[in-house]
Amino acid sequence: NPVTLAVTQLGRKVSGERHRILQFIRFQKLADGTYFGIIEPLYNVLSLTIRHFQDRFADQHWIIYDARRHFGYYYDGIQVNEIAFTNVHQPALVTGKVDENLLDREERLYQTLWKNYFHSICIRERLNPVKHKKDMPVRYWKFLTEKN
Image (cartoon, rainbow, N blue to C red; front, side, top):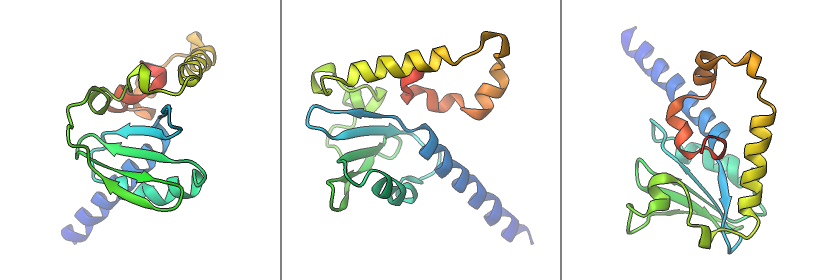
């Protein structure tokens, strides 16, 4: 049945996008202790990931923001609330890079350590850009700490 096939294929795409969000989101610790992560998924999958983050980071406050759809979720340690920013053109919401003055004192250090780790595990003789782009699509690179 073509309708069943179309629905099944769409379900697989959405499920795959949800999985990639769990893999590729990167958080930045803000000065108040809140972790901020930003994504731009193809499909509206943010609500499908919230239970994972709520369970995984139950003792931390966090914001996950969908830059494509201009909304996100804030977890205060007790409950998750949907949020929206009034100015969606703020640099942090466009580029994913939070202003240095708003970051936790040690966040820059952690970002530098993560970049160094990422580069140190790279074996130049085994570089395979085609496979790298398949495993980590370029559309996610915009918000990845190790790519910026």
